[in-house]
Amino acid sequence: MGTMEKRVVFKSGWLPWALLLPQLAIVGVFFYWPAVQALFQSVFLQDAFGGNLEFVGLENFATLFKDPLYLNSIQVTAVFSLAATVLGLRSACCWPILPIARCGHGCCCERC
Image 1 (cartoon, rainbow, N blue to C red):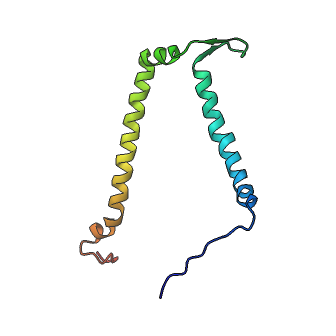
Image 2 (cartoon, rainbow, N blue to C red):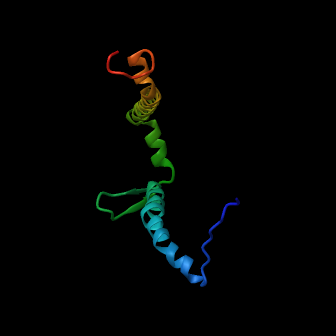
Image 3 (cartoon, rainbow, N blue to C red):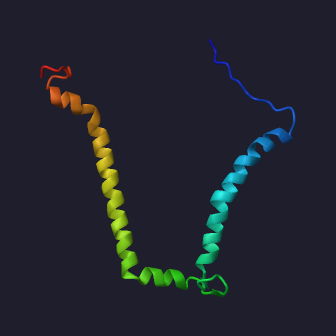
């Protein structure tokens, strides 16, 4: 027997866009707009109350990557991420064989 393929066909052209619009708005407002704002603000120096903006270009990033505390935090984050990944994968891979290793002969009985 052949497989039956079901397709949705919209009779009007505006309905698919009306269904997509809420999701596109959420993605735009909560993902793209903050990302663009962060990139914009990263090349400016701003006072504490948000009054003056001074364009400094990539100087903020140069200052950041010269700071030994920031470089140390990158190293600590990398080590933690690697350790969490390795330990998580190792425990996930060992979890299915624990009953076999505990029992000895693979039956997972209580008498062993």
